[in-house]
Length: 274
Length: 274
Image 1 (tube, rainbow over the protein chains, first blue to last red):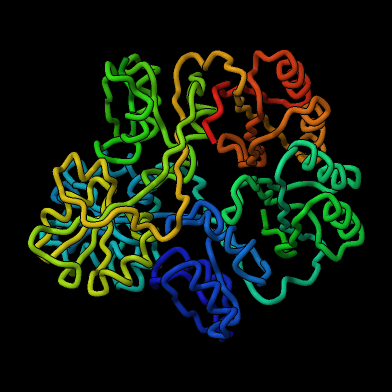
Image 2 (cartoon, one colour):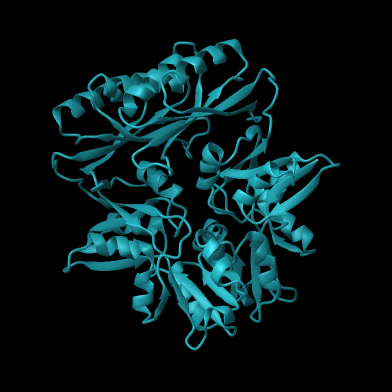
């Protein structure tokens, strides 16, 4: 199986893809989320792994928009990846000597406290990705450090100076696996749907949630966003408990569908372990 | 009046602050969103301008978390800033000669199409901010370009080679102005609230939206997110039409308050012009 992911190699996206892939899988990097998704449509890959929430490596808001408008693929799995940053230091230098620290701007921001305490003389300099930071460190003319994933350190054969240097614990990124088909029911599933509205959002959503609440179906997540295609039009993205083939979910979704102009099931897939 | 904003100067955050400030205002840059908000609490500024949605310049998801947990400040205004990127080119070079183009990674991503077409030989290199890209261009040893805001070009006295080079039209960032008090009613207002839930989200939200829908109060936006303080606890962020002092809104919010464990009004403020 060929699994497309947001490259380059060594990013957290590749870590998520590795977690998804079997040993026989072939991982194929692409340069943008749109390209990752298109690869499956065009037959260049069988499945796609893309970040959908709180990622360091791209404009993740676009993933949901692509799911709604840009593809017929369905979500068949969700992968929640804990984000732990590592510190690399150029060979021969100790922390007080470091004058520049490279990483993706969001990773630099997430390690602000560590940098202030341990790298007081280092200037933060942006890299295109956490993987790119390792290369930038390598070609630096000043004594340099890099903040990156353990995976990237392994790929580049770099020695890890410190683990888990992020300021806040519990930093996670959610990825989804897209494919022509979603997953079979397992008994502990979730279903992602989207529906649109033009006005009276409280009324429409109240009615739609009534279809769920009256059947005891729990909602796991909700989000509204402007529909980028048509001004003044909005979309709800909702995750609920259950599989779209569960009788009670099927019945509730039929009720929701009747209340919305646009309604699309983005996929049913197992809930990740808590 | 002293207005704190997310620096450095020349960023889109400064543009938003400029749009908010009167001529007599003093704009004061801070290095993080948390520092911008703290500045008002500590008396170093009177108001704070922070990005809250789709920004290039920081982890905007944190703004909402800070609003809920980290401050007593209220939203008193909202500023929607169209994001238009400009291209700067080092003096003496034409586009085909450019070998490196600097910007914030999200700005580089937003101009991917333009770069592919007009700067085919240029390597995209990350800067910490769109304003920082101008400095990076200045110190580049290879023929360089920078993608930045018009404001940054003006500050650095750089000639703008091309305007509006972003691939997608309609790219906007939403900022909020925070202060000890929110705004007076104007007749065309919105109110931001947050409430939490631990389980039966569909049921609780269904009930809360019933309080709005039954009174004909429209919902403008909704979002759920994990409460970063306590595992398994979630928060809804909801924008509704009307001012919290409008009799019907006050009555509805009283009903919503009775249904949630945590309830906080984040502020009432004028709706921006459409």
